[in-house]
Structure formats: C-alpha cells, structure tokens
Length: 108
Image (tube, rainbow, N blue to C red; front, top):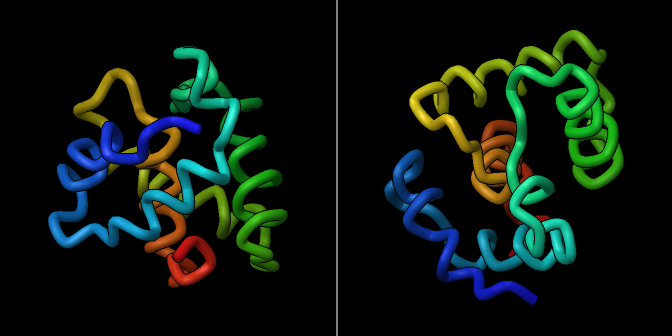
C-alpha cells in the first residue's frame, strides 16, 4: 500500500484541516491504482474518466443515489476548485468529493 503521508500535502492544499485518517482510508481504497502515475490521476477533460468517478466512487463506494446530473455537478465543482493543478491526484479528488457529500466517515 502507498504511504498515505505522501498525499497529505496535496489534500491540505484544498482542505487545511484535512482528516488524516480519512486520507489514509482513501489511499487504502484506491490501492493498486496509485502504483501507476496515469491511474493515480484524474483527467478533468476525459468524460469517460469522470463517468468512472461518478459510477465507481460516488455511486458504488459512497452509495449516493442523486441523479447523474447532480453527481456530475459535484465532480465539476471539485474539478473547478482544482483547476490550477494540471495533474489532479485521485486521492485529493476522492477526498474532496467525500467531503462535499458528507461521507468522510466511510474512510476513517
């Protein structure tokens, strides 16, 4: 498993009081995806990637039942907040989405 502490600076950039236990849980959830650079990042310009985030993370992991449009809007909000980063860390994206939807407890 990747050392969760390497992801903390990026998460703290967007949420200064980030919950270390939740970051650790998200790193555990991402698992092998973090071993390769390409899969450790989320491409804001790739619709199929954003669909995977919606289907696999928001619906499956967070068990959200909102409409696709509402879930896509939350993804767009996070992507907008991170627009200054060319490489968007999957851990940070997932953390911000879980925070946005009040689901950080799932990872503690």
